Amino acid sequence: MAMTITEKIFARAAGRDEVSPGEIVEARIDVAMIHDLTGPLVIHTFRETGAERVWDPERIVIVGDHQVPANSVEAALNHITLRKFASEQGIKYFYDIFEGICHQVVPEKGFALPGSLIVGADSHTTTYGALGCVSAGVGASDMASVFVTGKLWFRVPESIKIVLDGKLPERVMTKDLILKIIGDLGADGANYCAVEFAGDGLSNISVDGRLTMCNMGVEMGAKNAIIPPDELTRRYLEGRAKWSYTPVYSDPDAEYKEVHEYDISGLEPQVACPHSVDNVKPISEVGEVEVDQAFLGSCTNARMEDLRIAAEILKGRKVDKRVRLIVSPASRDVYRRALDEGLIKIFVDAGAMIEPPGCVACMGAHVGVLGPGEVCISASNRNFRGRQGSRESEVYLGSPATVAASAINGVITDPRDA
Image 1 (tube, rainbow, N blue to C red):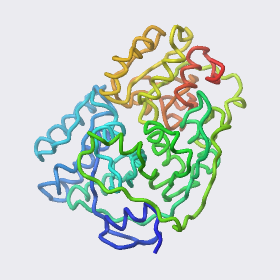
Image 2 (image 1 turned 90 degrees about the horizontal axis):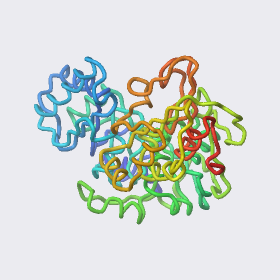
Image 3 (image 1 turned 30 degrees about the vertical axis):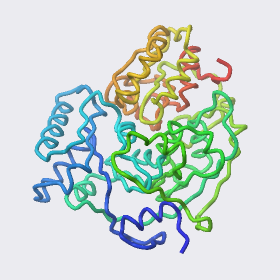
């Protein structure tokens, strides 16, 4: 029986020779991740089960990233809960504050490996599929069950194939590409499906760019997003993979619910307008939108590729005096590399505020909260009403290049004109 890459990974995890879409399987989990916002509820639920020990302390990853450093007593208590639990359970891979955003830390530290099955107590766990694994977000009760048993029930998803051909034009990024796809398919266009990216165009997309694409798979309802591993994957994992791995690939005659093809060579920058991620327009159709804040960060777009293109646009220039530009590198490692390359100096000289690695402005609960009537151009993944603060604020989503160009001009700007 022919299977897709996602179906093969579920079959392996379930100890089966084959599975079909729609089947319910009990699958063995390779890695489970929690962070400071979802983790305390997972731990509380785990204790309610009566279990004394987690199934495997070396397969659990804990990251402090959402409210770091603590911005309230409640946040501080959440951090204390994680620290005590990690110590009590002997959890080896506990990354406290300033290590970075969970969806950068997990692949960066070598936990996301081809052929594996990963769950995280966060919807953007789909990110790790960029490295050829099935990764999905789950709720607190499901994660507590994983902590006890190391297994979880899944419905095997149908697969949608997105075939990419060509090469992105200069200053058009994978964020623009994934926004275009989400705009076409809709916020519910891939509900509980596996979105599989394929095609020759992938060879022109870096691992950083692939992480961005899979990160936003959930914004079209996907259960998981995945890219078949290749030489770029192998090179990225060399020296960082925590364990050995076996790559998996779709059979040539595997069946897909839908197939969509894109020639990416003619794509222009895209912007998701308030208040929905699928309310996408080419930047030429957005009009003159003044911005109060520009945010370069989040688990979607705060990696080296993102910081480099923003610095290229900002170098020797100043942020508009009406705009607050917030920059938050995705991890400690990215921060250090940005320092070594002089990118942080470029941002500071331009007038940006540099924040520690973390979620910060993305979630509207920490640094960069928007007030009523304020407008933000953001490199993050969601622009729901109230996502970054006041329900009377507005968030537009764009690429890091678009964010940088807009910060300079004070209006949403095509980075090709910057």
